[in-house]
Image 1 (cartoon, rainbow, N blue to C red):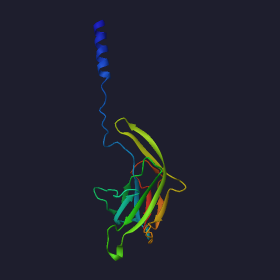
Image 2 (cartoon, rainbow, N blue to C red):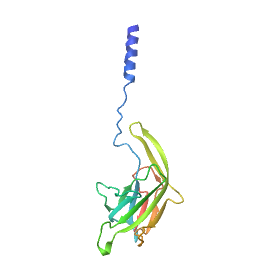
Image 3 (spheres, rainbow, N blue to C red):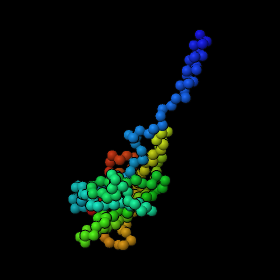
Image 4 (cartoon, one colour):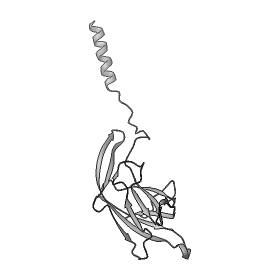
Length: 174
């Protein structure tokens, strides 16, 4: 009987050191990006393609990459906010690289203001950060230094809480 108990004790101690692999599953929800959808200013219910749009974060020289490209030609884009600061500034350049006089590049700047909440996901995945846009001044929209007209005619917050990428957070009308 003592041998059985001793054997069970040894087995239980040997298995107590076993742990689940520390691999973060690719399906685990991590820090969400800000989802922006573009709309036609003249018909606000119709989504509109942004043409050769590039987005560059303040202090960066390279643009945010979308599926391997730094240009977007579509109606929706997701951009990362800084998880260590309460503001992030982006330069949105429409018609980037164009030399056509009818569609020259036009740059608008948006500074996003938000609060952050760090949430523990798991030991393998670490923390993720959820954001809440400031309810009073969620963003500041300005023109570039070389002042031309703003290409973004109206910017509206659709959802102040950025906890996933399944919904639009910001709408831009142009």
